[in-house]
Amino acid sequence: MKKEEYQLMADQQQWHWWYQTKRRYLDQLLRRLDLPPKAKILDLGSGVGANFPLLRRFGSVSGAEYSKEGRELTRRYHPEAVVAADLNTFSPKKNEYDLITILDVLYHQNIKSDEAVLKKAVTGLKNGGYLVVTDCAHPWLFGPHDVSNMARQRYRKSELEQKVSQSGCKILRSSYLFGFSFPLFAGTRLFQRWKGISNDAESQNDWLNWLLTQVGGLEAKIFRYLNIPLGSSIVVLAQKV
Image (cartoon, rainbow, N blue to C red; front, side):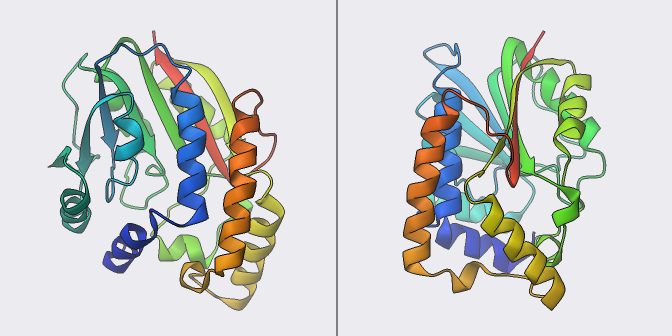
């Protein structure tokens, strides 16, 4: 991710509907896990630490992030420990964590092998520990916005499921996310690709942001009980066996 994208992410993480909705999905997912009271949690590719406030509800959190800008922004906003780490070579301490998250990281063009990153992550889990992976869906939606975010690809749901399964985990749940907003998302992305527009975040309308936040909150409540059949992102929950 480019330096300016990190700053933009840090500025937006509290108010933008996408981040708010994503955290609501994760909250619904994590609160149903059988985590110990003092769970050890590792966020791989932690970016600017946007997910730390949520994750710390479930245990003690640490992060691993390659970008110096990301680590500096994390330390500015959050007290958790974050280490410098290239996920292509970084291996967490074996059998150390109850939960490891890889949230919108594997798509990045600097990730040389997503399979290798997943397998090394699983070695860091205790037996019975949980792995949560989120990433962008549908290769046919790849466009200028993805290029701006230094994306290598978007995933098919079955493809991401297979990669997680082959890492040594049993898949417990897999779902699309952002289903209600998907028609708007897909239409916008296709228009951007046609026009060559790379970034729509800065032009976000306040009213639309409010509306999408409400819609996302409703969908997150539905997600507590049901998988989302179609959406712009994917979440896979797995357990080390």
